[in-house]
Length: 423
Image (cartoon, rainbow, N blue to C red; front, side, top):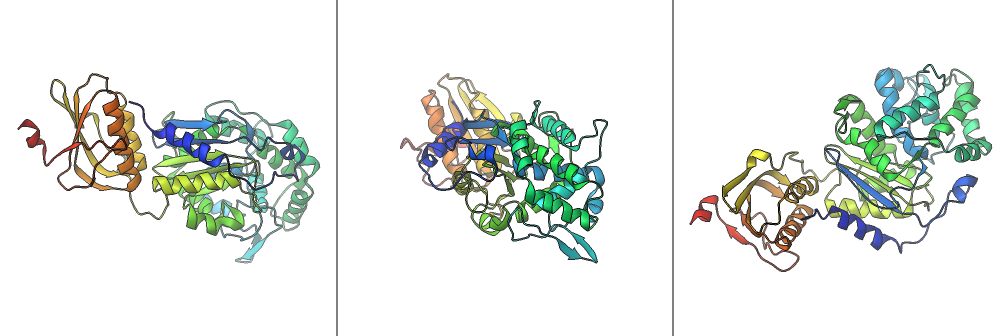
């Protein structure tokens, strides 16, 4: 059998392609010529498995999505207390390019690192390496997270540089208050180059995997960020990542997120999943119209809202929980809760079953909770196992999967306990 996640993502794009509205970011000439029909979505699991559909190999400039990762880098290098001396964490309720400073504790500083004044300040804090180029340090770090060598889009960089009047105004204002400690032109241009790094949605979810996995890069097992750094970045993404639409986003989607004016949006649910979407047309806040639509639907379908209050069990089934009772009869003993993340791991394990026509028993007696998407994925998985020639039954004494009728209208046999199987 195959896991249904790719089919689900493909359905999302098909349902969203007819969505209309929004405009390209025409204040940057190169972005104004982007293909408005490009559409892609990617998802990465806690253990680093990536799913993607649509224009998932199409490269676009990372733009403001870079702010989240650069902030994490600087907080990890300099420690949070030092960064907080320069940049606050208060939501601004203002546009991303507002010339906005705040005064707290007799100190003037940008309100948060997700608006341009804060992001330019954060960029200025990047320790200069041997290459003496902050943007190159960022590119190398992003490449490490993405698992491939990323490059600058020099046409995008030049286009932004030639129209950077507002960002230069922000830079001079920051220098005026000694928030920037060196040439504001050099810092702003280096920041713009950071925003011009090319990525795909697959790159973005690979980069996000380190935030999903509490600072550890699943691909290598290397700890990149401390738990404290991850918590700080996700907190700021939650309250500030979608600018002056952050309140609506938190209410309707409920996932820590960051958007960029090229049309990308990332979302991170710690310990569960990372999401990335790309579609170039933007709403009045500078966020992708179709990207928001897709993220809202994924949050609803998968039960991903941050305040759902359903913890992930992280281990739904171990190898020692799969028991071959006799030839042709295998039992999977499941544990914890069954929501999207856990159901995906279970179906990924079931897809390795050979098409031998044997019987598979799914023991739910140690499952404490099943949400709607977990139930639907479980039943869809049963249908897929049957299509591969297996007989399937449930051990469900608490009736936690009530009315267990699969999408193909097949109702699996339900046992009260494993002893019933031998009878």
